[in-house]
Image (cartoon, rainbow, N blue to C red; front, top):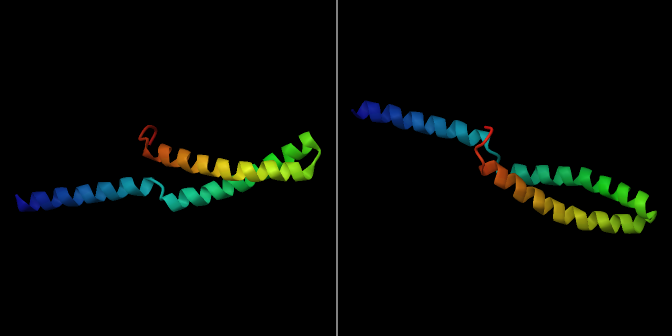
Length: 87
């Protein structure tokens, strides 16, 4: 009886550990957010520059977009990390 409980307990810990390894740590989501925003912001600055013809306006748009989109991406990642569908 006790041996069975120990085996079941170890199996629960093992399966819990495997499940946890598939989810992302918040720090990883932060680093992904930053790297993606660098790429996205450069894209926004270039598009803004082409449309407006003014580099200072393009950088202003890019800087505002950098902060707002990074926060939105982080929240989006954390929400999707809780969804079990497709795993």
